[in-house]
Image (cartoon, rainbow, N blue to C red; front, top):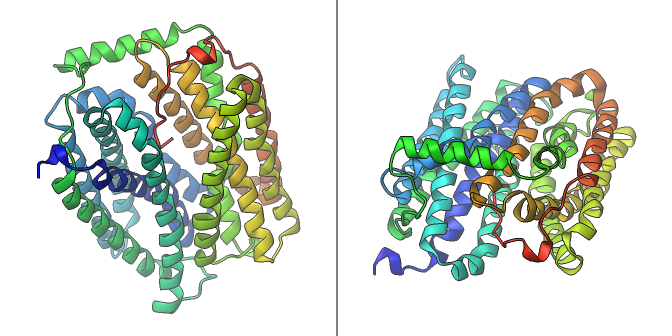
Length: 440
């Protein structure tokens, strides 16, 4: 049976799951690992957030990736290298000065992971016709979201289980004792990545060359320059840039510090949860809430239109963040209340974030370079996550959890202003449809 004839069900779900697993391990799970190893909140949030950079700037090197070999070739090489990278991390953590090796490895792996994303999206777009792309869009998105469930849920849970029940350490103490558990976790991810590469070698199509693929580096550079020029020629582009950067500002400040608050001890102002409970709450209930919110948010926008609902969606993203302020003040010990707070915040985040992605599709992206300009928009979102993540831990250390979550609520104000002044220069019924990238 030829590769071209194989069903997309054989490679679309596994391909996007593998993309998400690497991304979440690098940009989110590493923050928990750094915290477990005894880093303060400032450094733990900063180091993990810096790894977002490669995913933020990937539109800049995407044209060059597509010039050489097949898209499948880059997918396979990237997955093997990521697997070897995680195996290297597991080995390096046995060294006395392991951090000197870990950060360069993580940094290199983030660029390899961004390359995998470019090539995987390229296989999807060029191997499937538009009807099939639309048919598998939901499967694509769902498969990507399984990645965070496995990484932020299952593997964080596993790290806590191994730490306590296999290696016999105290879950409430952070420090070098956590190395043993995390080495096993990274070894598991390494094996998964290489197994996925072997699977995709058998079932993934090569991916056709897109009509716009540049033939030379100079042509790729010209296309990139032209895409920048035309982007800044869009009407009211600075308002759209402000919207793309600021809409999820408060979420960027909350993303790393929320889990830290959960696992920090009561003496540090936290709730004192174990990694096992953190993985259960964030990786299962929290992500289920995001998925449910996203589905309902999409239905809500489809019924009423984006222009009529955008400010409501902005409220949904930002106002429920108050749950963390309330939990930091009252510090509940009841797991039901803690889980409910996370579920509320995540559900409304999923509900409201739909508006962000649709706005980029319908207002910012349309034009000569629709896909590239959409990538610019999601890149601005990634830049927001990078900037807020880098400074979030340092701010929390200065303000304490109560003061910091109060600051997060103040940080919702720029989001409301950017949303209120976001331009609608393309009528909704005329906006070209487009499938949203699932790693947004």
